[in-house]
Structure formats: C-alpha cells, structure tokens
Image 1 (cartoon, one colour):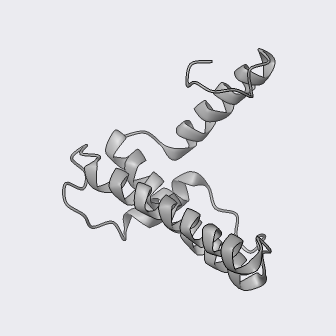
Image 2 (image 1 turned 45 degrees about the vertical axis):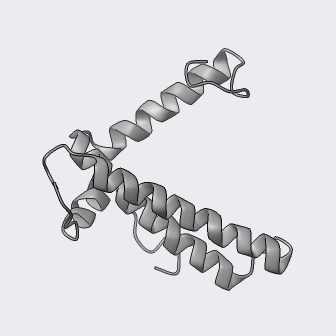
Length: 118
C-alpha cells in the first residue's frame, strides 16, 4: 500500500486478517509469552533502524528509511494484534482505553512526566 488512502482498515479487520497468518506456540490459549517477546523484538528492530539512520545519515530520513520503518512498525502492529488475541480484547478497545488515559492526563495537567498511574 503506497498511498495511505488506498484502503481504510479497522482494527478488527486488521486483527482478523493478521490472525490468519498467526502460527506460534500456545496460540489462542491466553499465553502471552510468544507474542510479547515478538513485540519486544520488533520494537527493538524499529529502534535499531532509527539508530543506524542517526549514525549513518545524521538522522535524516529518506524514502528508503521511511519504508523500512513502516515495515517494522507493521510487524509491531502484528504482535500487538496477537497480544490482544491472547488477552481476548479487541484492538479498538485497547486504542480507546489509551486515548481515554491520555485525555485524562491532559485534563489533569500530567501529560508530561513519568509513572503509569499519574
């Protein structure tokens, strides 16, 4: 998909489609080990690509770098979908809860700072 407007895809549509490619130990049993480890690995790959862009290109993103980062973010998204599957929670619920949390922090003036329960 080269154009962001090619296809609008809901979280549920993505999760359903991603699930057709999900084969891993414990799939569908509520065990999070495999998808959480995969999520961590893929997030690390995003960071690794950015590190090399900083080191080798002064932090300047070109079209190739952008595409590489998008591919890695897609892998992150796949593992998020797998984690949601194991937790039996729709991705859209996770997204909605996150937005509610952020809106609450903003309203209370604690959007910056640290700590999960601020």
